[in-house]
Structure formats: C-alpha cells, structure tokens
Length: 471
Ligand code: NAD
Ligand code: UGA
Image 1 (cartoon, rainbow, N blue to C red):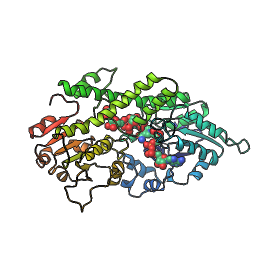
Image 2: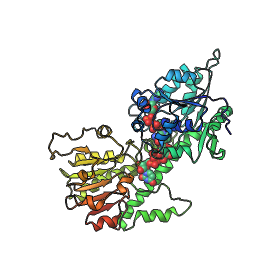
Image 3: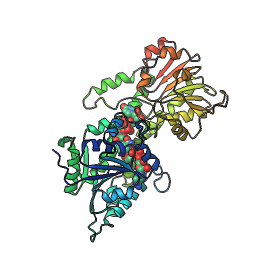
Image 4: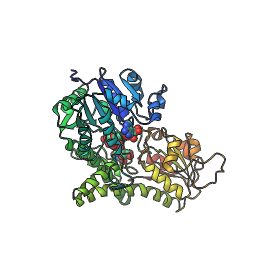
C-alpha cells in the first residue's frame, strides 16, 4: 500500500556515492514522487546526466540500469540548488563529512562545514513546511546544530517551518543497489511523529514495516557510528589473528571458518586483508574517539584507537614484507599491483590501502605497474601525488608508476605481483601463462586470498599469502 502522505517532491543535497544511488533506488520504488539530486559540482552533475551510462561519476553494479529507467522521468540531476530547495517537501542532506584537516580537532573530529552550509541554504530558500533528513554520517548532536540554524530562520509570517530527522545510510560500495533495495533495516530518528511517518511511508513502498526502526535522534546518529565501528573492529580482529596464523603454522581461512560457525560470532566480515579502506570506517571511529575524549571517557577512546592502530600496522607491514622478501631492496625492481580501489566493484579509492603501500614501494625505488578495472590514471596520480611514468623516459627510471590493462605487460620481467583488491578478474587469471613471463625468483604476494596456493607453488613461484602460516 502506498501511504506516502503528502510528500511529492524530494531533493537530495549531494550527488556522491550515497546521494546518487540512494535517490535512484527511491525513485525506482516511488514512481509518484519527483526526486532531484543537486550538487555544487558542475562536473559531477554533468556526468550524472551523461547519455553514455558508462560515464556516470561512480561505478556500482546494477546502477546504470536503474538510472536508465528513472532519469528524466521522476529522477533529475541539477546544479540549481536554490530552486530545488524552494520546491521541496523533504530534503536529504547527503554531503561529505570528512575528518577535519586543520583547526580544533584536526585529524580526529568531523568537518561539518558542508552540513552547516546545507542547513543555511535550506533555511534561506525553502518554503512552507520542509522535512530535513540527515542522511550523511555525523557526530552525535549534529541534528541540534541543523535544528538551531533552521529554527532561527523559521518564519511565522510566511509559514516557513521545519522538522528534522536522522536517517543514516548503511549501504556498502560495490553492493549499494542490493543494499538499498533490500536493506537489513532502515533507521529513522526523530521527535516529530508526522515527519517520521512521512519518511517511513516512503520506505514502506519496498521495505517491510518490521525492518523500519524508529528511535530518538541521538540513538540514530550514534547507531550509525557504532555500526561502522563494530564492522571495522571485526576486520582488525581477524587481521590480528591472521598475523598470529602466519607465525604459528595456522591458516586464517580455517580459523575464520571455525569461529564463524558460532552463530554468536557469525561468518560475515571476517575476511583478512591489507587493512580496511574506504571513506568511512576510519573517519567514523575517529568520530567516536573524539566524542569519548570530549565527554571525559579516555578509556573508551583508547579502546577504539587500538582498532585504528592495528589497521595502520596491517597496511604498513605489507610493503615492508615485500621489501624483506625481495632481498631487502626493491630499487629498480618491477612490481605489478593488482587492484587500486579500496574494495572490489567500486571505482572509489578513498583511504585505499593501495595508496599507502604504493607510496612506500615508490619511495623504496620500485617501478610499479598498476592494474584496476575501474580506477583511472588521473585518480591514481592524485592519490599518489605523482604523475605516471612518461612514455619518453627510459625504463630504468626508479620510483615510477604506470597504469596498465594488459596482464602480459604487467607480468613481463616483473619481480613480484602484489594483489591488493579482490576483483573477480584476478581470481580467474591464467597464472600459468603469466607467471612464466616473470623474472626469477618470482614472487606473488596475495593480501586478499585470491590465488589457489597449490597452483602457484606448483608453478615454481614463491608465494606469500595473508594469514597463511602453512607456506
Ligand atoms: P561524496 O564525497 O561522494 O559526495 C558528497 C557530495 O556532496 C559531493 O559531490 C559534494 O560536491 C556535495 N556537496 C558538498 N556540499 C554541498 C552542498 N552544500 N550542496 C550540494 N552538494 C554539496 O560523499 P559520499 O560517499 O556520498 O558520503 C556522503 C555522506 O554519507 C558522508 O557523511 C558519508 O560518511 C556517508 N556515507 C557514505 C557511504 C559510502 O559508502 N560512501 C555509506 C554510508 C554513509
Ligand atoms: C562500510 C559499511 O560496510 C557500510 O555498512 C557503511 O554504510 C559504509 O561503510 C559507510 O558508512 O560508508 P564500505 O566502506 O563501502 O561500507 O565497504 P565495506 O564492505 O564495509 O569494506 C570496507 C573495507 O573493509 C574495504 O577495504 C574492505 O576490503 C575491507 N573488508 C571488509 C575487509 O578487509 N574484510 C572484511 O571482511 C570486510
């Protein structure tokens, strides 16, 4: 049953990894509501409007098909933020909330300048009653900041009023469409029962009512941070156990299976890897650390700090062990890197372990050849702070990088291959054919449990596999 009350126009501020897919799925599920996704970036909006759907600004499996169905019908992308706001019944704030890089709380607190600027623009250009929905992940009590800005602009003469809800997003990149279409739960925090019902009724178009959880604003804001902190903590836990496996003769994949069968532990999120990346885990744990310190809970802060420090260690130990295994020097050696995105099925590289690891290999003088099915050269150059090797320079330049699609060129004369992202393509590589092209002794470093260890060893290639003490 469609009980969407009187919400006819929805606007989303922020056309990023959350705003774009979330509104696309909502538009697909709620055909009688008009959705407008707006952004400050002209380039991004023009990419969202590209005729060629392979040019969308983000790569997400299944997204192109949905965009094709709804764009221009009840989903629109635009830079006209003021006009969109003036017509909206409900506004989602889905802008970036990165860690502050300067000033008080630099390196730990969230930078809320984009959220605050959204609140001010909404206050200026909205009309009538507007339900403002906090979709971005924010520190607890951010709704109070938004509320204060909006309330001080309520206009009793024009009847401009607001209510605010928290509706954090739990999608993961690479599975965003699936997560949005079939969420484990939808969380709505707020006080105003009518607004909560308006938002719940929209989700009820495709989400079962029992999965729609209603809480107060602060529980909702904190639950989002807590969910990410718990997920990240599991990864640090399995990575810690993986390192013990490596020195004791155990295999982390067997340990994972054994502990995952315990229903209280569960089998998900126990993949060992080169450290978690992505734009959120680190930022959201830092947020909890900041809150804990602010509210005089130093022991709580220390507890979460350890999840991050284990992750930093995990990233760094990989580049170090590559150097160690290659006789302590990689200067002038050729190393192929398979995967630059922070996980498979996304073009996102934010906080990808590949960035730190590549930088360390480059600073040791290695020549690295990077492959990634979806990340482009411009993005890698930005992440590494260094341009790719120019065609004109000779092959002996040290500390250079290039992006390469052709596996033959990646493997040819390379001393080592380092797998950093678990793209499906890498699981199906013809290892027999490609490893023959490598320089001897040849090494495969598998940080994602991609290869079949027996196959690699039978080829006479040396193998390091994360969490594997049996090699
Ligand atoms: P993003 O950087 O991909 O997109 C944010 C967009 O907001 C940018 O395009 C930026 O130009 C735009 N923007 C900034 N200020 C604006 C303004 N005043 N008006 C209009 N547009 C503005 O970020 P994202 O990954 O989509 O994340 C957005 C929020 O969602 C963050 O708080 C993040 O923590 C949270 N989140 C992200 C994910 C994820 O998988 N990426 C999942 C759940 C929650
Ligand atoms: C994560 C959460 O899973 C989402 O629920 C949340 O909405 C989102 O953060 C957010 O708030 O931004 P995301 O970062 O997109 O989603 O991707 P994940 O699948 O969680 O992976 C994060 C990192 O952890 C990746 O580098 C991944 O390779 C790594 N990871 C994940 C592991 O090393 N092991 C695992 O078992 C799972």
